[in-house]
Amino acid sequence: MADELILISQTDAVRTLTLNRPQALNAFTTEMHAQLRDALDAAADDAGVRCVVVTGAGRGFCAGQDLSDPAIAPEPEAEPKDIGSLIERVYRPLALRIRAMPVPVIAAVNGVAAGAGANFALGCDIVIAARSASFIQAFSKIGLVPDCGGTWLLPRLVGRARALGLAMTGDKLSAEEAQRIGLIWQCVDDAAFTDTVMALATRLAAMPVKALVATRHAIDASQDLSYGEALAHEGNVQSELGKQADYLEGVSAFQAKRAPRFTDR
Picture 1 (cartoon, rainbow, N blue to C red):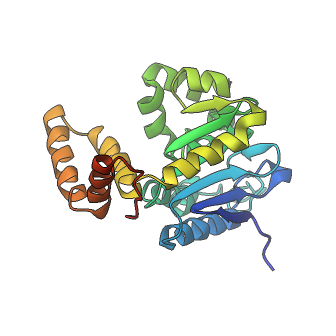
Picture 2: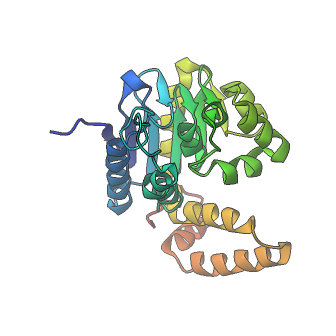
């Protein structure tokens, strides 16, 4: 029986996925990738899920790729493994799966997030980190470039200068500094971390989820559009959302001065 590398739990409409290789700081293996993809697909297909939280077991969030995984580990006197093939087979689909989730996704970074683990977190919609957590672009230490979307995400989050500094030095960045420079949404004290994450996840789950996901897509799309094109795109998105039940419910609740009950997904 395969190890349970992804723990799955649910509280009301919030699905929590916990990376479960604590002895290895939850470093990725190909089997862990497969289980994570299956868990994300299941959450996407479940109408009862309105927000997903991804976190790590133990003292780490994810230390990136496990370099002892046979898919990547060098072998004496053998041809070097094609790392690009691994990226194409598991990391690219994972990053795109997160970006295509039909519900908001929160990365709850409870400890170190390094290499692909850091960029996997940054690819989620909102990143909340415990104050003891840290982020490390560890790729330069082993002669590689940022992957799992890192080359796209970093300059858009913190600008070219900081992106290059983080990627080239591979220096550890504290959660507090990550929040200060805009790399993540929020850094909270360890004692308040779990409650803060669940409070936000519960809040997002009660909001108009379809509109939240459309917001993700519109903001991402705008990075490649002119100002005028972005305005036009906004209009197209609003046309679609304006036909949805959540818009009618939101307006009705506002006019009636009552709490709305959103149901679209």
